[in-house]
Image (cartoon, rainbow, N blue to C red; front, side, top):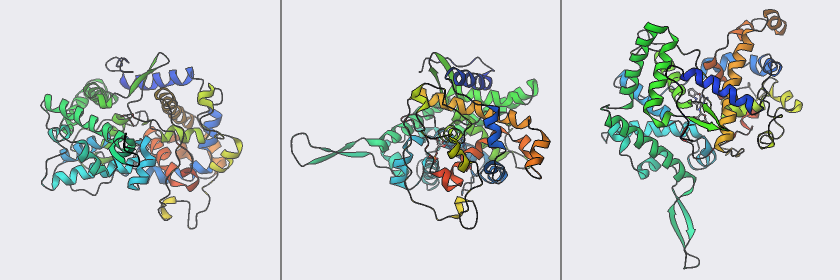
Length: 421
Ligand SMILES: Nc1nc2c(c(CN[C@H]3C=C[C@H](O)[C@@H]3O)cn2[C@@H]2O[C@H](COP(=O)(O)O)[C@@H](O)[C@H]2O)c(=O)[nH]1
């Protein structure tokens, strides 16, 4: 997989879109306008999109940063480490949190340890020197499994291993590798590198228009750090998703663009592809937008019952009343451990993630083409549907999966051992 070439310089974002479309179509995945419209015009979508898109751009952190650069560094490290979806079940069992919340808690732990006078674990040096034991402790996962002793019956010995250990190894490799590259190139921390990339982006935008800035920032990060090189060769086709770097760019936008004088030049981002994780493709399959029925059985049978008329009847209806409203967040926090969905190979996962990237591009175009009259027929004030954007759609799809009890029960796929999402 490491043989995949980087896209040509200046064409990284374009390569995400084009490679994902090519892989999606070559894999026989269908995304029809009719199925997209069915979702966009459904009560499930129209009754929750604005609320969720407006309120779920959290990234709100209960931290006081000493400087904007310190905050940029924190958001950058959080994005680099935003992995572990494949360990969601054991994370729920061992920490009571999902992947994202566990990683966020881990990053907070790095911050608090550093602020408490310990080594600055958010510096390049600190990142590169963390041990597996420290990582496991901050993350709160077990890294030992019991094995029967080889020659003494009845005796069990502990040795490192298991899913907790796997996740710790992924984080350790990301931290060591990224920290080392930063140290070798004379950067104090990841935020320093990103700040420089943002400044380069601004220069490019002055020369080549607003959209050039995001292109430059993304390319610099992907070229510099293997942890951002989320790409592969699947069935002889190169595919580029770059989820974590796109997540970082969304994050920079969310944290800094609303300030009256942003401390860094913020690239225009509304055209950026979505961050393809496991949640968005899975939800798009359940909501009938990504249609796997014409694919090879290895894909077509992954989500039995998804996208059928009966399933969609419930999922596209308004959220079932849950006492005082539809918002699952108002319910007592359930400690139910989620059920494991299908575990995919790297190639299968790239195909579904590529389909999600392409599906969202098509959804935005389909939304733009809706007739005002068509929307008026559905109800007053729905003209906004024509103006949905990729970043908001990403947030809606990701957050709606946790917003409704019936969506929470939908299975998401998992891919183990990936450092990319
Ligand atoms: N496409 C997309 N993927 C996202 C996020 C987020 C974080 N969203 C918050 C960030 C800012 C806003 O405040 C959002 O509330 C996490 N993930 C990915 O989901 C995966 C599953 O995790 P889980 O369900 O916990 O197990 C994991 O690979 C994680 O990397 C997003 O926004 N878009």
